Image (cartoon, rainbow, N blue to C red; front, side, top):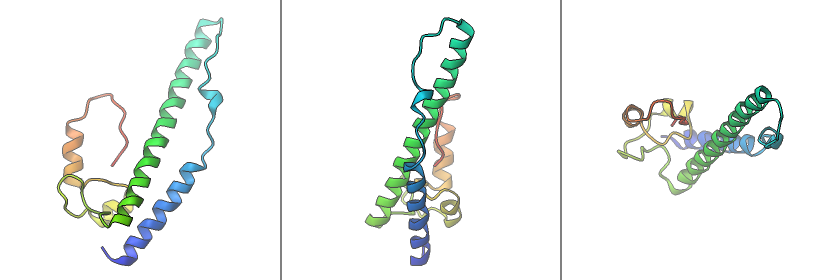
Length: 121
């Protein structure tokens, strides 16, 4: 990977980190309330669960972006964490925080639990 490409990925990752750290947090979506109407309580519980999952995904993505920025500083960015081969520039262009090459990512995804929530890369 060229220095220009590395600088571009660093810029993209910094922008993504900035975007994620300034997203509004809607705490009221997660608040627990007592509601006498059973149907409304079920609806609010479902909405609350979605809000918690969204917050969790944002947090995990923010962590992955920061790890990618740290890897740029250490000089290990763009290398697969499993096989240590270079991650394709096309893959990094699509998912700059990617931790694995396509082959290793595919092998990991084949072992995942159906129905579980995972974040790409």
